[in-house]
Amino acid sequence: MNLLMVIFGLVAILAVVGTVQAFKERNIVSIIFNLGAAVVFGGFTIATIVFQGYPPSL
Image (tube, rainbow, N blue to C red; front, side, top):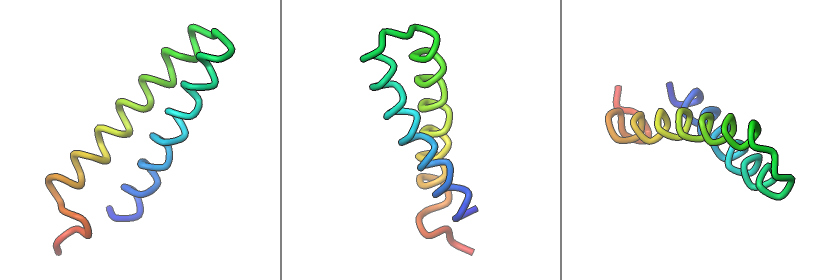
Protein backbone atom coordinates (compact mmCIF):
# COMPACT_ATOMS: atom_id res chain seq x y z
CA MET A 1 0.00 0.00 0.00
CA ASN A 2 2.98 2.27 0.55
CA LEU A 3 4.05 2.40 -3.10
CA LEU A 4 0.46 2.69 -4.30
CA MET A 5 -0.02 5.74 -2.08
CA VAL A 6 3.07 7.38 -3.57
CA ILE A 7 1.86 6.71 -7.12
CA PHE A 8 -1.62 8.08 -6.37
CA GLY A 9 -0.03 11.15 -4.78
CA LEU A 10 1.99 11.78 -7.93
CA VAL A 11 -1.14 11.39 -10.06
CA ALA A 12 -2.92 13.96 -7.87
CA ILE A 13 -0.02 16.41 -8.24
CA LEU A 14 -0.01 15.97 -12.02
CA ALA A 15 -3.78 16.50 -12.09
CA VAL A 16 -3.31 19.83 -10.32
CA VAL A 17 -0.65 20.82 -12.87
CA GLY A 18 -3.03 19.81 -15.66
CA THR A 19 -5.76 21.93 -14.10
CA VAL A 20 -3.53 24.99 -14.14
CA GLN A 21 -2.68 24.41 -17.80
CA ALA A 22 -6.36 23.88 -18.62
CA PHE A 23 -7.20 27.23 -17.02
CA LYS A 24 -4.57 28.89 -19.21
CA GLU A 25 -6.08 27.29 -22.32
CA ARG A 26 -9.67 27.87 -21.12
CA ASN A 27 -10.64 24.24 -21.72
CA ILE A 28 -13.73 23.54 -19.61
CA VAL A 29 -13.87 19.74 -20.05
CA SER A 30 -10.21 19.40 -19.12
CA ILE A 31 -10.72 21.53 -16.02
CA ILE A 32 -13.60 19.31 -14.87
CA PHE A 33 -11.76 16.03 -15.40
CA ASN A 34 -8.50 17.28 -13.89
CA LEU A 35 -10.26 18.63 -10.80
CA GLY A 36 -12.13 15.34 -10.42
CA ALA A 37 -8.92 13.33 -10.68
CA ALA A 38 -7.14 15.60 -8.20
CA VAL A 39 -9.97 15.29 -5.67
CA VAL A 40 -10.31 11.51 -5.97
CA PHE A 41 -6.61 10.60 -5.96
CA GLY A 42 -5.65 13.31 -3.47
CA GLY A 43 -8.45 12.29 -1.13
CA PHE A 44 -7.40 8.66 -1.30
CA THR A 45 -3.79 9.60 -0.54
CA ILE A 46 -4.72 11.77 2.43
CA ALA A 47 -7.16 9.18 3.80
CA THR A 48 -4.50 6.48 3.53
CA ILE A 49 -1.98 8.60 5.42
CA VAL A 50 -4.53 9.43 8.14
CA PHE A 51 -5.85 5.91 8.69
CA GLN A 52 -2.76 3.79 7.89
CA GLY A 53 -0.03 6.17 8.95
CA TYR A 54 3.14 6.92 7.04
CA PRO A 55 4.97 4.60 6.83
CA PRO A 56 2.07 2.18 7.30
CA SER A 57 2.10 0.14 10.45
CA LEU A 58 2.27 -3.62 9.95
